[in-house]
Amino acid sequence: MREFTIYHNPDCGTSRNVLTMLRQSGIEPVVIEYLKTPPDRATLASLIASMGMTARGLLRVKGTPYGELGLDDPKWTDEELVGAMVEHPILINRPIVVAPKGVRLCRPSDLVLELLSDPQLAFTKEEGVSALLSEPAGADDAPRAALVAAGLPVDDLNDPNLVLLRFRLPAGDTVGYGGFERHGDAALLRSIVVLPAYRGSGIGRNLMLLLMRRAFDAGAQQGYALTTDADDWLEKLGFKRLDRAQAPEEILRTRQATQLCPSHARIWSRSLRP
Image (cartoon, rainbow, N blue to C red; front, side, top):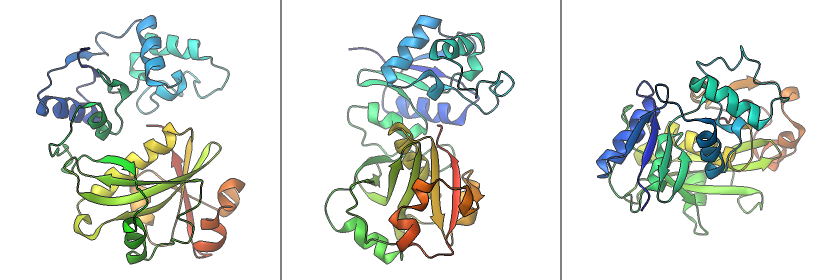
């Protein structure tokens, strides 16, 4: 069986959380501090291919020379971007975990649970919240009931473009629901509700970050949300408020934007890059 390896940055809270979750599961991975021992070009290209990502999708922006090097320019090929990451390892997003079940960029750190054979332990992150798993919400009435109780729209839950997810603890307890509609490079993040027992615990942030990663993995690059009362929460998550004229037509044409949300609902947006 292929052993676990983590490309780790000890200064990164996400990377530390992933390493801790592996060790609490009884796994002692090979730890590669990639800023000290960066992968060569062939290894990095192989990791990217195994993750099913593009080189651009793996680039880290925050705290790196991304802007200085002009890497936001679409002219750069994947091969050139791999070369930039080899030359400047800080551009490699982290942590990457190699496991028997696959290779994954584990951002948010919850994603490492999917690489474990039977993740049933309760994991508490450094920030004091539980790690979550996500899965299709299923066809029962629980998501609808939770959304109705929270005063959120449900008339379009059967929209074929909606990906509705259940978020749960490793032991199985449901903590909430959330969904997204992908419209090209844009995703409308919607139908987000935390069950009453878990409100005020900070777990909503976990849920939202995991939902955004799901939308990113589905091919979206920019996330959008409509709200009348969650402005502060979205702002803390890095969203920026937009005028309606700044939002893509694909988002403005959704049923949520045209029929179901109040006309005074505000539009917020942020990059979905992990």
